[in-house]
Length: 199
Image 1 (tube, rainbow, N blue to C red):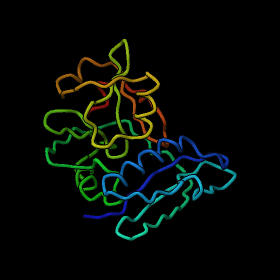
Image 2: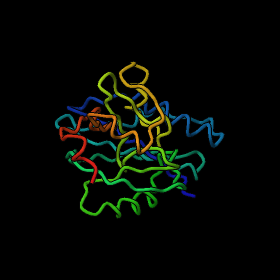
Image 3: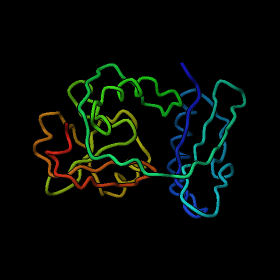
Image 4: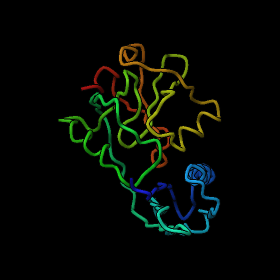
């Protein structure tokens, strides 16, 4: 099992966004491996002062003390307007690992769709790059069992802007809108009619 984990952090004009949520998730990973030596992620992130960047911070827990590395990538949004339902009851991506082999293999099944929506044990989880939320005409709800608890998802839950529910495949017909959530897109509503999104 790879012990290299990562955080994807948004930076615009040199400003780093929502770093406290990334710090919290990083520390939770350390706890799972009984590591008490934590770093302040903010001290390692020095993004360019102009433009929007994806800061890719990796940390290798196979080394003691563990090492951190940050690279900066000009951000270009990947447009997602269609999703293919893909079923996998065994996939596990509960920690944000740098090894994405399982996700990449499932992504290869997308056919003509932009991305996939993974179904595990009959429940909706995530796409390969984002958590997901659905609008039921009253509020936005997100799967209670995502593959990965994203930082944007966590922030919006704490702010009371989205709510957790078990969402089964058969429930999709009850929703009118779909939004994707991650550190880079924040809360991105897909403008298509929901019936046109699933292919």
